[in-house]
Length: 293
Image (cartoon, rainbow, N blue to C red; front, side):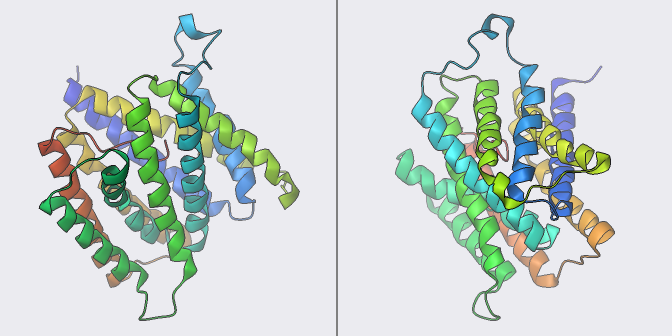
């Protein structure tokens, strides 16, 4: 019988695996419009969530006390998920994963203005180190700036506000309702992109596209469950395995070999986010959240 910490470790590992496989499928799906992939992410992402709705909420599961905050969270989540989907198609997988680790840097900055938190020396140092890491990866000023590097940064910005919004929503709203509103909203919004020449997928592609939603939904639920069962300090470092998976899938499927500057920049970004994580633990806060939700 596994202990709570061991179960939490297992859930975190499964979450990282699910997100990594989802990213690889999104990168593979570049023959389909982004809006069509969003549709599958939203529709099939709701399936795991429906199993969490309590029986007493079957007929009023949609009710919320904070609709405007849900709207802002959905808008920020939509911006971030579109940005990461585009980035995965335009850049090497390991590069996108590396820059995505910078989300806690922007969350720290946003928390100053939105939550009126005080940020001390160590977290400011972490922000500085993280930005250096992003500069090393994207190399602006040394080569012609590749605008595609902006997409994972936009993802980080959007996800950072999502972190703030979820922190506020969680005080009154169940986790499943927050995720349900997000998945349902991106499914509805995706309909406005049908004019972008949606394609009829064959059976294999239909399966893979549906897995984008199922894996995304499960990954967020597993991540939440991991934090409920185990100590945050034990399971959070596991999320950096995503870089190993990114390098593995990138090389295996697309023959991508990460450059020294990508690995160096990724190391700085990881060090930065780890410093922020340790300070959050010291200050008895929990910064880590589900990646897309």
